[in-house]
Length: 335
Figure 1 (tube, rainbow, N blue to C red):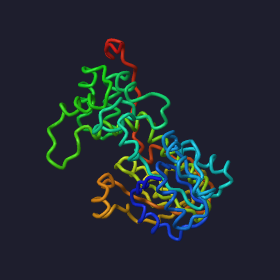
Figure 2: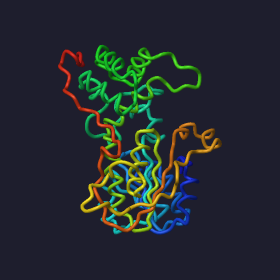
Figure 3: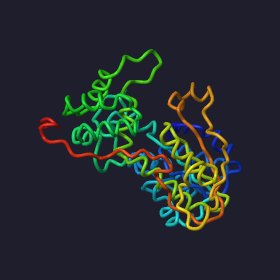
Figure 4: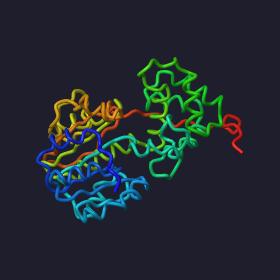
């Protein structure tokens, strides 16, 4: 078996959640690093979930070594409560979510996630549904700009969207990265690639990552036992903001409107914050894995009380508008 990828912030996560015991769920299984770490730290059993067929293919070579202590199911973490119930693992003692794209997805040019590796413009985690190529060539300029601004926090969203429309059809990651780079100042040494925010925004849109995140947080609230832990690792400010507000409003600590629609009076707290502020990787981890530099870990403990639906507006979930489909002339000739 190949040496497994070490997941980001695994040490701090295990230390914060110690003692690790009972039944845990890893909602973003990937290469299985968190699942193995949880079992080695004391978890009785770990249920992994992943929608990427490649994760299942790779796991087939080593999963049998762990017997029934690690079980992998196909699906999304937005349905983790249903999948855990089917495995007889509800209520759960802990849930781990590692958001965003995995190293093994970035490293495969054919998946189309990375501007550093030329490949087809795809970005689908499940290999089903609309691809980034479909979105880039099919959405109108206004819709593209909206996606880049809200999901990528790209200030030059309109300029980039206009350039994409003029250059269509766009088929590869290298083509898209070059289009974006021409719209922005040349980066200084050590700065991020100019296309970073654009690629992030398109990936989020293609995979409905914000919708999936909210569904996953709600599902964890339903599936965890009182005293169970929810640990979430984020990689950009937008998703970290949503996780922070979900946990803090659930703990009754956030100002403004609650994410819950109260029935009578104020709702009782459903969460207790374990991490006062986000845990960041130390210098040694960033040096060993530069992709970890933007990672943030937040942990909360489930309290007693009936789960409630989240309010996306109160959580600060970005709301990009889908817009209309481009005409054949706008898309350009693809044949």
